Amino acid sequence: MGLNLTEKILAAHLLEGSLADPPGHEIGIRIDQTLTQDATGTMAYLQFEAIGQPQVATELSVAYVDHNMLQTDFANADDHAYIASVAKKHGIWYSRPGAGVCHQVHLERFAKPGKTLIGSDSHTPTAGGMGCLAMGAGGLDVAVAMAGGPYFIARPAVLKVELSGELSPSVSAKDVILELLRRLRVKGGVGKVIEYAGLGVASLSVPERATITNMGAELGATSSIFPSDAQTQAYLEAQGRGDDWVPLAADADASYQEEMAIDLSALVPLAACPHSPDNVKPVAELAGLPVDQVCVGSCTNSSYVDLMRIAAILEGQTVAERTSLTVSPGSKQVLAMIARNGALATLIDAGARLLESGCGPCIGMGQAPASGAVSLRTFNRNFEGRSGTKDAQVYIVSPETAAASAIAGVFTDPTTLDKPLDVELPRFEVNDNMIVPPAAPAAAEQLQVVRGPNIKPFPQGQPLPDALTAPVLLKVGDDITTDHIMPAGAKVLPLRSNIPAMSDFCFLVVDRDFPARAKAAGQGFVVAGENYGQGSSREHAALVPLYLGVKAVIAKSFARIHKQNLVNNGILPLTFADPSDYDKISLGDELTLPDLRERVTEGKPIVLTDLASGAEFELLLDVSARNRRYLLAGGLLNTL
Ligand code: MIC
Ligand code: SF4
Image (cartoon, rainbow, N blue to C red; front, side, top):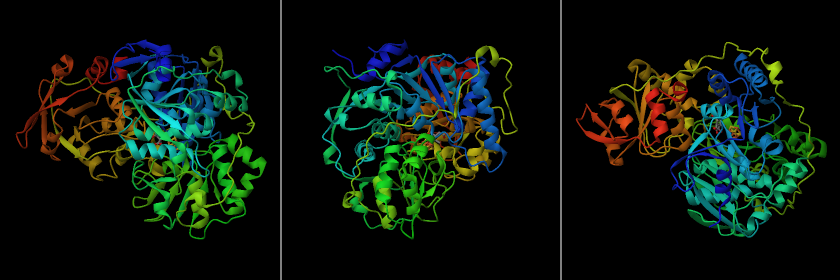
């Protein structure tokens, strides 16, 4: 029996465990490349420093600055100075503010087919568009990988998506991933790598593939990957990196745990409606809805190809009077190229507001919509409040739908425009002058790391107690995102290296009294429904609850990255043996977990008594033996 693409890359990197084991069993793999961005990077590098290794052990590690770019006070700039200095000292390349969004720049300049990459950002699988097995992870996992340690994951199941046909004009790669979200929903990819195959693959360029793999994160997938073929070779050659190309595909007789098919020629423009990326409808059904804001950019849709398509639609037009259009180019390369070829002037002439190359409005750093406004965004997430305006109606769309709607001022199906949108892959203009190399190891020893007042130590877990009695501090429902747990945006993001200051914002969207209640109680539990912690990789969604005394989250199920972040920080991710027991617990109930340490050590179910109601039931700790050790020690760093 042949191997699929995922198995081939895993087999070439396997350090612990076996691929003969069924999906779900733990494996440890060697990581070739790492990336961080500034909003998670400060913590990841503080943790790397705590490990105490002088130089990174990876083939390549890159520190990007793209999230925290507003610099309304010293905080962001402090973080940049810290990251720049820690990178130079420890063998890490530093991508300066202005160079672009981490995933876009990584795809352009560093990602390689057949390599493994982990990044402290959930959209790291963008590089899967290049045939790289790329995964989002918590900052501590990235720190360990930088130090040369294995990255442990549950051996993923592989879902083959067989693509046939070709996209119709004005239907976009974005519509492919929105179709997958429509079918599979936000939990549909959990535990899986989504592997694209079939005759339809050849028609998609690397930037288009990267749009699709990027948003696999919204399915909860471990990763998404395309084969490395002639398109990959053409892209790498156009980036002046032809030598990085290797051909890579699944064997003809490979097997998969699951399969599904998508006929590209049957797709229509789609939109994810408020407030979830899987709430998908055809744009035609929304046509005519007035649009107040259109934002183009983010790691999903800010490539040269995307912006050239937008420019083609905006050529000679004016953005509708009621509508504001912003454009954030994905990288310096994209921005410089559209500046030189005239497309930038086309965008500006049409009335686009140009923002710098960075995450910007995608993470709520500016451009919050008006109250109740309809905002169309080419981004990947439309969680409630993420835009900065809680009642804004945010829709996730393709660049083509965004541009057509910006001109009309109402939701517009781009296939109704008669615009030729063929964009050839150009010869990219390469200038890596904003990516700073690390110091030579001999010179590195003398270098000082710059620590401004915004750089605060991070909290560390305590060894697991013998038993635990504490109140329920919060009870929430299904699909709670890390944006609920630890919001981002212009007010909070600058505090990413200052956990005490961040703690005042924890769960604010859900319950504004939570931080005060948690501080008063000293310790306690969070009770949740399905898919707790979906969305971003931000470790702060574990570190801040840890700081506030959360000892365990008791949920119906967890999202992958967040579950590991809880374990790494010594917070128990417990599930209900019988999900209906969720209904038996109320906010404020005092819960007791006797013999906790012994039960975790021996891998036995954990008994919970709700002292308020007298109800008693079982909880499961569905983690590997290694993760049990971390929890007993109070987290991964304590174990190391
Ligand atoms: C996001 O898109 O939510 C972020 C901001 O990029 C996060 C990382 C973070 O919170 O710093 C992610 O996707 O992991
Ligand atoms: Fe940045 Fe948005 Fe991409 Fe996250 S999803 S990395 S905030 S552009």
